[in-house]
Amino acid sequence: MNKMFKTGVVLLFLFQFTLTVYAQTTDIYAVVVSVDVPDTVAPGEAVKVLIAVEYNFPEHTQGIVGVYDPESWEAIAEMDFEDQGNFESGFELEIIAPDEEGTYELAADVLYFGEEGLTFTEGSEAYFSITVSKPAEGIIPGFPLVALLVGLGFAIYSSRKQLNPINSL
Image 1 (spheres, rainbow, N blue to C red):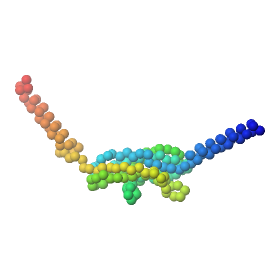
Image 2: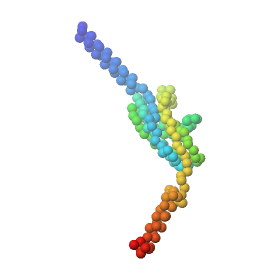
Image 3: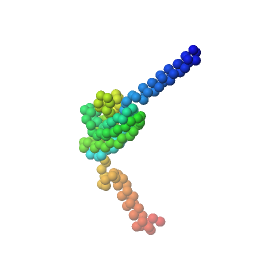
Image 4: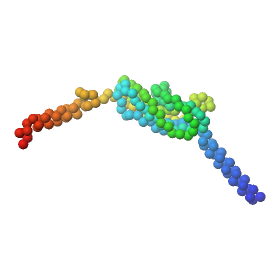
């Protein structure tokens, strides 16, 4: 009787452990883990937004990763994906910076098709901002005026020393 009782306790423990592990792996969820964007961009510039998403899809599931206006939740850029399993994946989306300068608040989120249609995990979004400003302008694009003046002054100084070798002695 004692041996049978011990066997029953072990089987009950294994059954409970199996149910616990199964319950943990069948929870469907998807959350944005991180967003990587440049801090400052030029007006109208194409901007790469790298979004890392962690998800657990026990069955083959379709999802959508996107960049949204956090006030209206209007999509700015979206990408569809399909997968099954527990993963962390990276997605690269491209958005176009507004033409007006300023700091823009945006949101990245992930949605998926569950039993009741398109849904999301509570707290799955990540907020970020991008500053749009015109780059410093110089005479030559990409080179600020101060750098050009310093370079020009150095070039004139160097050329005067080479042209007048007697005075440099």
